[in-house]
Length: 317
Image (cartoon, rainbow, N blue to C red; front, top):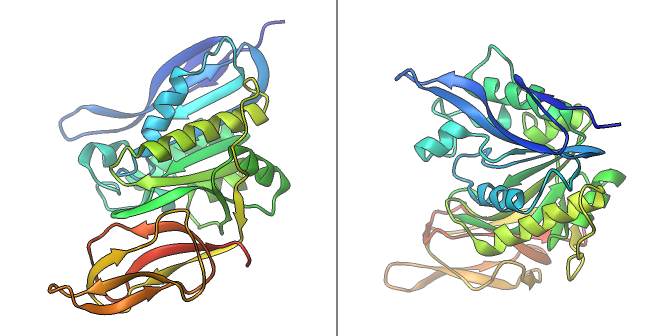
């Protein structure tokens, strides 16, 4: 018996087919319509319904390229289940070159949203009702914020066995047990019963190849673990499970010179770098406040006292 077609927005996608559409968001002052771009791959055979999204923040473009590469490698004729790809969730942020929406709201603090709320709330509601509500698993792709870069990592509720299983399957260098933020897509989707992985990797407004390839491989491993595609090679090394993390902050204003790289293991009190004045005189050393793995670092040349400069995940906590 052939598989039923898949309904989303105003269309139905037949089994073994792919379909692109735009879900209406708003209308610009010029009268032009703005829509949420979505591609559905509705496999011939039964299987899970999964979504993958990127650019929840308008400056986080690594995930856009991840989804592009992922889609070129998948065929609905060979897929088991259904994949909903949302490559640009914050359409207006990407169009204007901004992290947030034009009203300065953070889309990832606006879930589950409302059909009659702010622009951010309406986009969140559209994502929840048309995508998340149809899925059992989701992968939310992110990068570091402005002038920060992140080691490829999965953040998730590692105390949930199903989530832990899929996070391990992803195979990122680090999987971090991360608290859920109110208003986030991950929080709202979990409240609806979905299993959600949040990927972090790379820097804002950069196509960092190492972060892109790690995510493409990771998403394919998750799809394989779900039985949606044929088995793929596991990661060369299992991800290190970390239970907590924290940022080392600058204790002085100055020019930042970091000596540590992403993925490097450091010990409590170890030198991470230094702060200097404009003549090169060392003002203060930057030292680790815990033993762990460097999962994020500032790329800003000038920092103020109190700024976050190195993110360390503690796998012993």
